[in-house]
Amino acid sequence: MSGPKRTNLFMLGLLILGIVFQVSPLVFKGFDYRFVKGFTEVLYPGIVVLLFFLITREKPREVFQFHRVDIRNIGYIVLMTLLIYPLIGIVSGLTQLVLPNPLLRTSISSAISRGPLWLALLTIAVQPAVLEELCFRGIIRHGYRNVPLRTQALVVGVFFGIFHLNFSQVFYAAVLGIFMIYVFYYTRSILSTMLVHLLINGSSVTLSHVISSRLVTQMQNTATTPHSAGSVIALLVTFVFQFCLYFPLYHLAFRSFVTYNKKRLGLLNPPQYAYYPVRIYQGPLTSPPFGATSIPERSSVLTPGVITSIEEAPNQGQIDQRTFTPLFFVIVGVFVGFATFIQVYSYLVR
Image 1 (cartoon, helix red, strand yellow):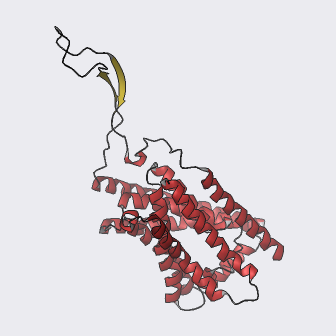
Image 2 (image 1 turned 180 degrees about the horizontal axis):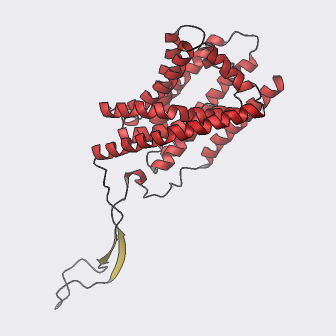
Image 3 (image 1 turned 90 degrees about the horizontal axis):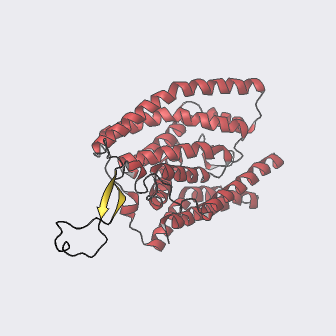
């Protein structure tokens, strides 16, 4: 079974289990399921990862790549995460204007203002930074390792967004997923993406506790309350201002990060495509004919030279046709169907 096909089956199983745990509150309304739901939300990605290795017999060390991250890359990661955090907030805010999150009130993250900070950090920051990274920047990325980097980032980003099972989170999670694939690619370590994930989720949890516990209530009201025309315009102006402020800074930091790692890996000046004629003799492999000074030239072909860029290896810029298989679109269809059901159901019972 090919890598992408096996990876898509893994993603489909992860998605189906996630849907089961999201639907359970609707089925068992009279049952106090909070502990069970919290437990499964925290641990079920780890269970799926364990089953993957038991079935496939893959070597975790080859899939995850726990390589050391040098101090300069840690600095770049912290800086880029601080700069991309507002950009993710913009994408999330724009989505909330159109498609409010109906699961926010019932999700485990809605309880971060209640209870100790250490428990919230462990549940909402540390756990996803480990288990979700093992799933997406580990197993799923490894399954698509033989496709061009841009395609790999797109697929893993889409799957990471789909994993959140609602329209309001799918877009900003996809953006974050794409970003983390590039972080992994240039650092060659899943530890770097775990750090990004920990910083993103940990800062949200800490701000919610330290600044004000009312922030979560405000987020919930924003996600479920219609906005007036004036408030929408004000939000859009704020988003535009923030984007113009933070995106150029993020772009500069990212370009510096890429340049440093290309130099570190010896990839700053990659060779270019070279097509040159080669004369090929198609006769028998013997000595030149009697009286001749060289083997006669029978034909010529164009032989490709070396690959131009590591971003496109090994397919030389061509999208692998196995990437967007019917199973890939089944996964997208399952997500769209479930997210639409939850969105419609929330409006009917509200």
